[in-house]
Image (cartoon, rainbow, N blue to C red; front, side, top):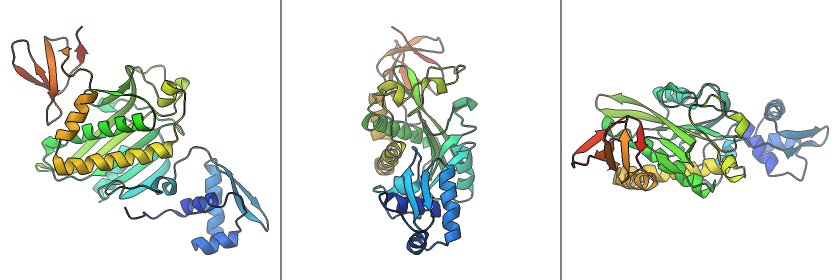
Length: 327
């Protein structure tokens, strides 16, 4: 993947990180980065406002003292080996929701593979208009634009692509074993650790774009979850007792999304469906949907529907409903 351009702020931070044991004069930073001394000071103040400790002394210059767990594009892109995701990467401190903002950018022509990440969301949202609690500094909130040339009916397949990518990274980076709940929840021990909200724009029968919205609870503590949640929730920190470096998690997630998307374009939905079914504990189990007759879950349909078989052998497709295991 070709290196994406970095902001002046990120370039200054990267240079400071490369010289943590010495002072960097304003003249050297100006010469190396081709920035004015005024622009450098402006970006130093912006970095300090984010909580990054930078010492400044007359006639000596600047030195990085320490930084919280913040996300910067220079860090995320370093060593990243992908093809499509990300084609552009924007990281912001606060916004309403990454999906809302990236949909606007997609309408304005944002390329396939554009990624938007927020440190905090003020109006994060989940399925059915539910609120997704999004405090600063602890979790990962991001959205991705994809523009596959597929029929509208196949668009839900990208939701399952997102799910299997997140589960992979929860296991490899977070050291957490997760399972999936149809249609798009990710659970650990029955508690929700991640959620998806994918939104589509279509022209006639073909997809124009899909925005994949991903929210993963990484370092959230118990007191950061609101008491009025209508479902149990958890985080990697609560499950393991260890915090996650968000940069490492994001890098791994972008690589898995890119891998599965390439596989999807080449081989279709079958490999992703097989992986999702391996992660779903209700496959081949007896269930009741909306308190109806007991059936057996036999798999996932290409459009995301749940495939059920009655005791009489008839097959039924479920596109929505409350699925409960029957012991």
